[in-house]
Length: 209
Image (cartoon, rainbow, N blue to C red; front, side):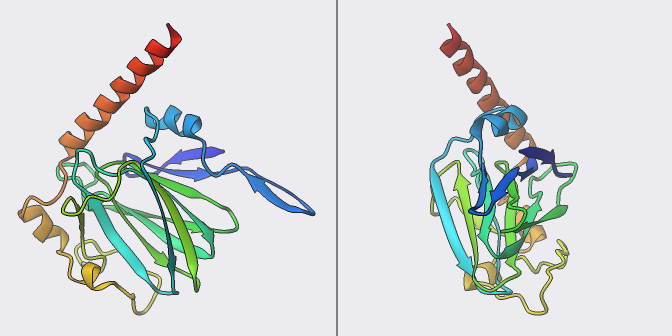
């Protein structure tokens, strides 16, 4: 598989190699060792989610408190979505910036999103199925959202009318979340990730003894 860093630190696009014949197609859509090589630590898999979405549905922008945050490995197994990574880390050089990756059942790409980053997607097809691996379980009160239609963010959604949940529609703007201290801090996120990298290196060293 090919793993390419996105313009936002802590996010990567993963493109698998597909093998096809008259029976169908085979691919490795997730490899913990390849991912750990570029991220610096393995994904500690705690929960796996799956959603189906009608065309035009927008989910997000979601994020979690750091620590522990919630890293995500996202792919679309049926249909197509426009996946969006948003830098919500206060103090980050790319704070408020976003990047998109098309995830679909043709190229079978995935996106890895580190702790502290925001995530959203828009369904481009009817009944799009998105699945994602998470580093932490759902924790009520510690997971939050930014309104995906916030004009300050300026995310360009490929639909005339985005279909939102009541919770996402009522989410604060980026400025409101920053002013109230809701957003994760860039230095806190970097320190937390560095701690995980050191812990991973220590475990690898112990296993080799």
